[in-house]
Image 1 (cartoon, helix red, strand yellow):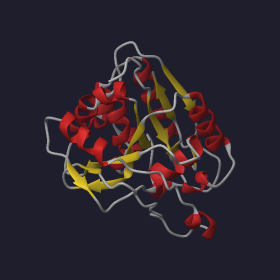
Image 2 (tube, one colour; image 1 turned 45 degrees about the vertical axis):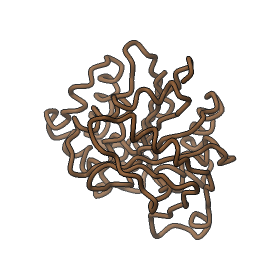
Image 3 (spheres, helix red, strand yellow; image 1 turned 135 degrees about the vertical axis):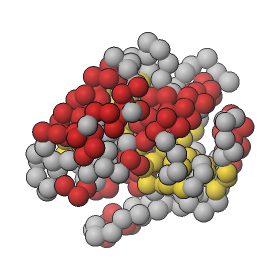
Image 4 (tube, helix red, strand yellow; image 1 turned 60 degrees about the horizontal axis):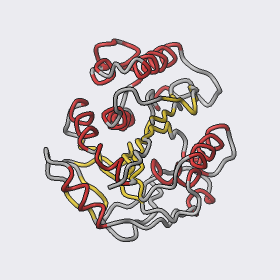
Length: 257
């Protein structure tokens, strides 16, 4: 246990090429990583690991997962050889009382995790774990589970949610534009975060068509709910990227604390 409370963040990770390309998003991730206290360990909740039940990676050396296709060979060659931490996995399992989190020995680090961490912590020398998203559960469940993880923040653990607030790949266009409905919902979520009003973010479906289009596949939205559940009252909030990419993907990233 330590006195310093680690920040918590949500990263709009978008295209996996952000791990490879020098652009406004990768530059912002690099700058944020350099500004942080070096964590004892990192726990990432990525949009790209869904399970039935909740699991945490518990192997000593997680593999780098290239969970995509159609990208250049150079991207598939990238590795992020960070160690894991079976001990921290057990601590997480004992910290959460509401459910039985299962240890995982098979997954590793998917691109929702390593594409971001390769920019923030390029030396890959900090233990990294992933927590899965239970696809059978509600938005409220994910928010509440985030709240249960709060003790980890005072144990030197940096918790990162990785997804996208607006994520509708079926409507993506390869142009630097933003659809009106995407701008609408992204801006509304920003306002709710600044107002510490998490209820409408949890119950996003009540906002109608913009939310329906934005949260087209909830797994990219749910990591944000963990991060908001981890927030303490009065903590400062800053947005270190704010842009809609491809019409229908929000790259908004949030740092709390």
